[in-house]
Length: 400
Image (cartoon, rainbow, N blue to C red; front, side):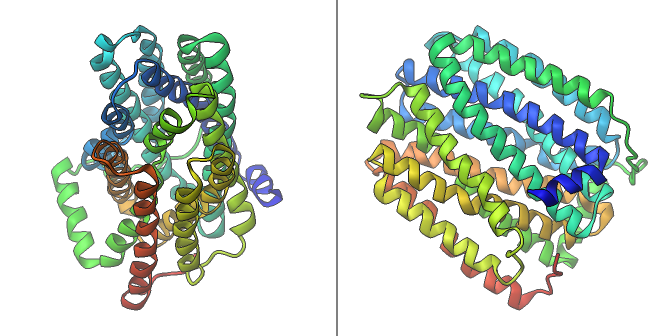
């Protein structure tokens, strides 16, 4: 962890952005546990749980073609402040949801909230390569993943107890309060943000991006590779596991919190252990290991304690996969395309995550066991490992 602390000391802008990330992500997981606990208490169908999980990603998919040109034309700070305001109000409004008749309101609020969150994430990830490069950029991406994982761990664990002791609505209000704190922290931060495109029309920028893909196919290959990490969208799977296997002897909010927290422990530990070892050649083995870890989880998921342990192993490889594949893309594209290509990259990633979430519920309702569903997720990473060997042979991929 020393290398990450040193990076924060050397880069004050990154330090403040990271603090904003920590607070806003921490707050977000309060509402996440509360939403799934509410759905379980309302006894909704598996497809409803899966649809809600899909909504967490769908908004980012739909807005991606437009968010890239917006990011390349406007100052990042103004965009990010506006998006946090949207998250504050959409999160606080979740307190209005209390029965099955409010499901459509829940759908819309999640869609708006996650659209803002996804737009914020894309804006920030487009900003990082403008202020950092090389190893610092890789470490910043790893740090971002660690912060997400740490927030995920603490947020899920504490939220499980908050929901259990104080109720669902309190969790929503605490979430909104976290975003208020994040807003003022970001408001007081000054940093240089060059706007590369100011006069070009949106559709001209979009058309130019597709021309770039044709002349630089490695960018598209790396985007597709990164999208495989979207197979780790386990929210729907975990909620169904709790409902089917553990709810009879364990409070739903506590089981959700513990399972997600266990995986997040692996997410935090993984990059610390693998960060110095991972490179272009070793990425193949990490993809392979991720698939095998998910297969292990599939085998033991009916047993709560074993499932908790397997969740740690599953999370161990995920953060490194996400951060390294993201950094590879940033390293292998031109500066003037950062906003648009990062947006399309997020669109592919979120599309994979949304599809994974929805298919989890769909297959569950069509007599597929949850362990078989997890097996297919693991198989996806074996396919990704094979695909990555093809990329290395067919394209010149710059090392980080």
